[in-house]
Length: 216
Image (cartoon, rainbow, N blue to C red):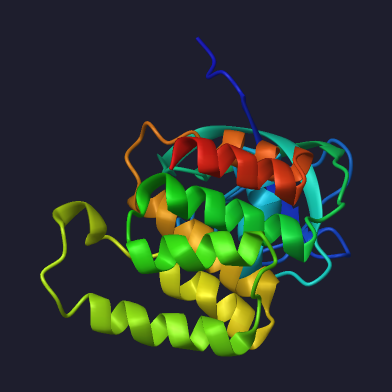
């Protein structure tokens, strides 16, 4: 029995070339036995758009719907395979900086209970204070806070600093992606990251605030 094909989403550069040098168009097939150069498309298109700035790091990416088989490995958001066939090019509209922040903050607040970060995140979303100064101050406050004896459910803070660095540096594409990548990687398998990605793209910030305040 032949192996079923799995749908996934591959990131390329603006010339439709993916790592290391695979050229794509409609109905193109590439195969690779060397595990250093196999294909690593995403399970979800929206996740690809949010995460690729810290992995593929394409400034003007294209996204291709592909069919894969001979799967070697998969994690929370990508699948690695030896066989990849392009189906069609997808819409390449990227998230705005606001959507990137909403995505990263929603993901983090789903798991992070650190009180200092929660206070800052809601202030940021409500546009009460989005300054670099407050973000830097919050980094220091979290560092001091973590020196104390904090509840076990506030110990996890791995995705926090990248979000704050997004504000400090102004590089939302990279650091929101890094924060989301860290959180998805660390989260239990039950996390449905595509739901968060879809919500970040569909909801405006006021809706995100209402959702978060109802669940915090």
